Length: 233
Image (cartoon, rainbow, N blue to C red; front, top):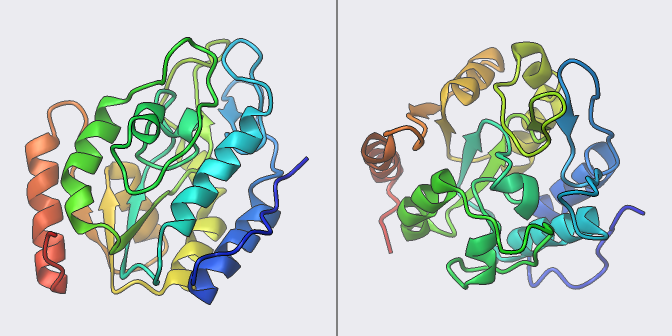
């Protein structure tokens, strides 16, 4: 059953609530693609060997916890590529891992959806929040592909998504942007760069923090927020 929260939104801006309702309809009940290029929907799918019971509900609630942490409309949007299997695939939150939710490392919390014995941790998520927490709550993070691309027969893996797979979710990305009307968009990684170019929207490209890109990522983030007039807290 799809989770549709009815609790209070703690003065959440109307556009964020509208965004949540849109995702509830367009994403949370969307099956993944199965075949030569499988995709896993963290908010709908379940993998017995990897997921706890009701893991999809847990991930929806985690995302809701993240959205609920904003008391006002975020001024910027950070667009990533796709959920990694040690990160958003289990947490339900872009650029975020279970360990960060469990150990109080973020200004919002969440529950475990994995059944792998310990909270999952992702290097990119650790680097991301080390830099980005200084600018919270002035940004909202989202992925241009909200489903997890994995290698056939290996759900605990990552693969690079095709352009066609990412393009399928352009309407969701466009709606996210339309709802937020951000002052600036930071595109993290080449797939995010291409998505924003395809949508003909102004954005600032920055290197992905993985594979030795931490310093370049941090420098790009700091320059992006400096130009908008948002200072680290």
